[in-house]
Image (tube, rainbow, N blue to C red; front, side):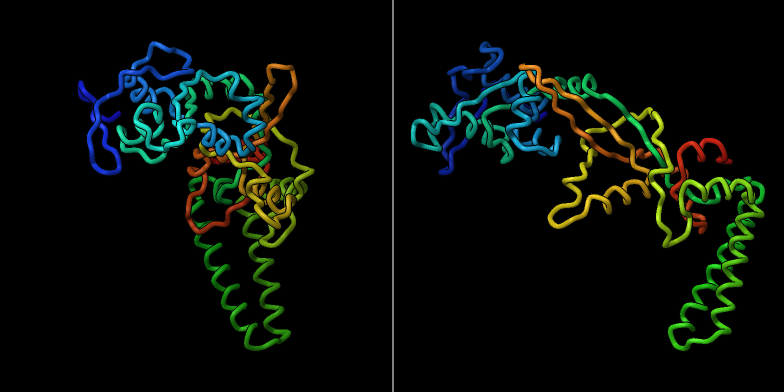
Length: 309
């Protein structure tokens, strides 16, 4: 929080100083708050505007007004517009607060208590599940032989890349046969180091080929515990933007091991409003070893069963 002296000085656009106003902020939940206390609240407890909440919930204002705002403590600052002057020193509390705190983001009258918003989210969470996790394939190799696995895989990949470059210049049965042999060697490498039966089980649920189609329907969601951060929430309708396709977004979330969060909100009149968000568990990063082995999106249950780390 910025240091607030005993007398708060503010400045208008001409650089003229004016002292802390004596008039109380109207329509606030606690009418006894002084202007100085309001400034402190805007930096600590009441930091969410209506626009910010709409942004966090990936929703439009009427929905937020119906399902979220009624449950949040609010501080209201008059914006002075009824007086016909944006710069009215007597009525434009929004302007005065933004000047006092030197914060251009203070442009709205209503500011809501952050802890109330966070408590509402926690209360409204219906389920937290995940289908997959994206990890290095070497996670499924015993640590004692992991380096050998990575070295052999790297050599085969380099040979495949060289074959691909040659194939651009010329087409021949010899190069096609070489590519097929290398792919057989790569498959055998996985079988030898990870286990043929384990790989067979995995391929029944998802495709691990570079350009294969992920079989989402064969990977049921599992209950998951996650310390989530609402700042990281993603919504499908928001991710696809204009002209996007839902299925592509869902496939990308699946292939990257997203966690699904379902929230159920109840309006004061009893109406139900559901929100579905996706997020990533930052702890997943420790299972991506950057050791040259491929990254696979595998069922979360498969990961728990066969990981060697």
